[in-house]
Amino acid sequence: MNAESVNAASVNAASVNDRALRAMRRTRQAHRLGNIEWFDAAYRAYLVGIFGGGSLLWISSSIQDETVGAASAADVAAHAPSILGLLVAFVLLAGLRGGAQGGPVALEAADVMHVMLAPVDRRRALLRPALQRVRGSIFTGATAGAIVGQLAGRRLPGTLLAWAGGGALFGASVAMLWAGAALLAHTLITRSSRVPRWTATAIGFAVVAWQSAAVYFSFRDGSLQILGPVDAFGSLGLWGWRQHATDLIATGVGLMAVIAGLLLLSRISLEALARRSALVAQLRFAVTMQDLRTVILLRRQLNQEHARRNPWLHVRRSTEPASSPVKPATKSKAANRSRALTRAVHRRGWHGLLRFPATRLVRLSALAVGFGVLQAAVIRGTTPAVLGSALVAFVIGLEVMEPLSQEVDQPDRTDSFPVDRGELLARHLLAPTMALLPFAVIAGVAATLAIGSVDAIAPAAIFALPNLLAGATGGVVSIVRDAPDPFSADKQQSFVPPEMAGFGATIRLLWPIVVSAFGCSMVFILRVAVDNGGPLVGAAIRGAVGSLLLAVVVGYWVKVRDRIRRKFKAFMAEGRTQALGAR
Image (cartoon, rainbow, N blue to C red; front, side):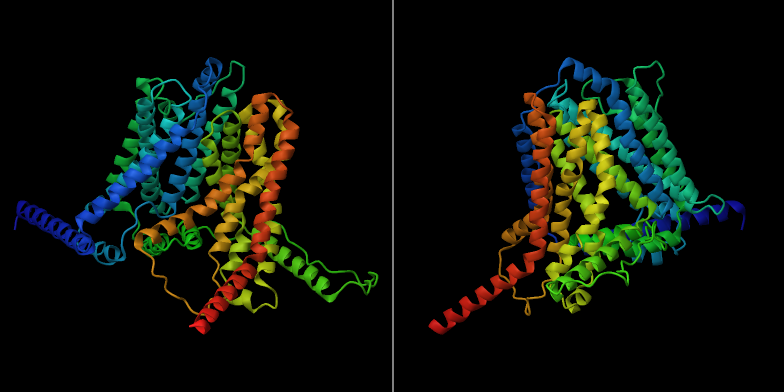
């Protein structure tokens, strides 16, 4: 058999394998979606489009923020490209880190076990899942960009349609950069035995540092200006206002990164695919069940984020010296037991917090910077920024309240203690509240720099920690709400219509974010003082008092939640008993 016959046979076998793979995936998709009627799918899309899009447009149109002046518009034109570029730099860092840790492609277990080990070209087998991943990222980025763009168009020059289109182009370009960076980091670093994985993180941090320097020098009046590595992406974000043809370089860079990553798909690690397939399947199930705590834990496993073996600092056991005076007899045993419980819980909470890995601390610091900048944007007149700050504070609360989450995750041990569960959970709030202090300082510094006035230093110092604590209370509500109910001996099925059940699930999911939004809305007190020329320090004190009151109310709710539920269940049971006796 000559060489031409061998080549023809190999080409024929490859085409047969490709057709078989496509037929298998079509059959699996048909089996999976066979029970879904097209009318039901269209009805769901209709509901999402009408209620989601309609609600967004209604909320956006109800916000009557004033259009910025000429001076503020000039500042935006001068500084926005570098600031948006810093956001893009963090997205690039996330893509590089995710790719070095095995992302972004995730296959089903059947594909990993059978397709990847079959005599099929690996790049062809992975091309469709990779394209689906890139397509989903582009759609998400374009949607988010269009939403933010039409909100920005209500205050900046330009039409809403132009801002929505420019924001969609910016979001799609950033999404392509993220996906391409993740694919390249996986194929060039994960599969290489000579290049360590921390190289991807080092490259990402170098880009962030360079772009941070560009942001810093853009605010200086000196002649020294630094061009950031991703300033083109930031300038693309202003296309709703003005269009520069050179900004399309950013879109080209993102597209080329995606194409290069797709060409190198054959180098994807099979071990990483096998590991991610199991975790992603669990993650999708947890999202379906709205188990937010499990979603967070699985995301940490996907990112290979583990607690430190040795804490950053060692917490000594608090013991009373032998020469301490005898306590008065008036001190009851209950009070002594309460103090001992507080010390033990406080020490245990710090043991968990001091084992946070460096990646989580960096992520929390970045979130704190974003929180401070968004709160400063609210003070300067951008009302929708309060929703963004609420989401950021909610995520910070979920991260910092790790001791409370760990207690909730082990209900059997918690219920075995001779202590009321509400008392125990409430004491777990002390250490995380103190741990918020450094992130509050970061948020206050970021807000002061964003406002650009030394008069904001004192209000930021007063208001930063209470405001961040109030925003984080949504995370506390979410964690405690998901705790198992120890008082329900039997699970009674409630016959509720599907429409009402879906509405109730949505309210249950959004309620913690509403609490965070209420806590972050205390910043409007400072905004009113700025608009009316009132004393900023007094406004900061009033806002801090309101934030602390919300935090105290949430802490008290954590303490008495089980008691209220116990009394309510007893009241309902007594009512049912009396109704049966009357019959």
